[in-house]
Length: 390
Ligand SMILES: C[S@@+](CC[C@H](N)C(=O)[O-])C[C@H]1O[C@@H](n2cnc3c(N)ncnc32)[C@H](O)[C@@H]1O
Image (tube, rainbow, N blue to C red; front, side, top):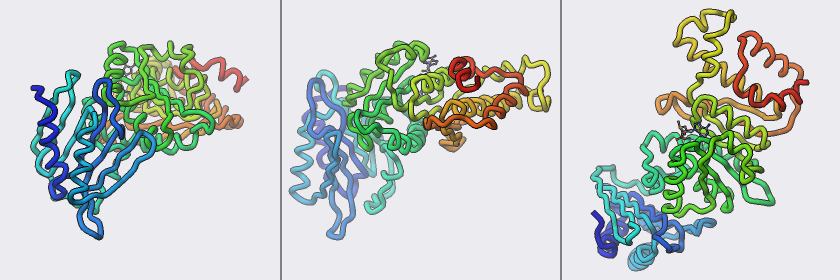
């Protein structure tokens, strides 16, 4: 039930100032037609030589500023933050998680969840284990569960070094997430890149389902994320979208079946410098293996479960080989433990423009000939491959 905002905010003050009980708090997002300054604030207790302090880190979206407070100045600093038109407050204490969201009518929607956590070890910075704090209200706004937060964090760890490497010197970094779905990754990546790598980063999420673009745009606006947009389009349609030419990094997290191939093909066509694709189901090659008249090592494809697993390996091997032939340096890595998602392989590629060696070309030719397959990615990139392979 919505309630008046001011008393609800006043109730947060003692929680924020209690450095024995507070675990951490984040203020973010913005109220309708309002712009908080700073755009985000994070509060937590820290143990310093002079004693326990309330540490407040604020950012204007570009530069974080950290200050430590005690006594009266802590109270004034908290008052000043509570007076800012943030859209969300997420306060985690030893006993509870309190979430306060400001509704469109300017009322407070407060949710309190009881919990028991160990006393705060302020010297041990647990938040540093995550690139984006799992308690970030952004995830709450997105409705992401713990498994999704972990997955997104693991993906960001792979993205970070590539983004640093490919960030253009003369213009903002441009990123597209193809098959973005609920945009957990899109928004987390955008927030991370804007905070750590390029405050001017432009990110676009593309999904074939129109309701996704609508919902994601709303969540992004509520969370105060700027430079981020969403498009309802198929990946194939995105190929000719003039807004998307010149993208630096292509992301695709669990884009269904051959949608991953669509994403990889686009990355090649755009000559995106960085590509990170964690494939999902692999039906295309599985079907081709089933139809093949004779395959080497027939036992590998005789039983459905083995055929399925083998098709996964064969599909991603062919994808990696094709990217290499087309001038990418490619690694295929496990980006997260399989207990979090069975779809945990990541194709990570950086464009170098290096021409393939004869050996690489022969390896790929032998692979597809032996298994009688024509991978979806090869079909999409026929002209580009013809130019390389002759
Ligand atoms: C399994 S979901 C993954 C969503 C998101 N990347 C994530 O990891 O949470 C796959 C998404 O790809 C989208 N999709 C599938 N085929 C597509 C295509 N050809 N073009 C654009 N989006 C597509 C679906 O609508 C769906 O939202």
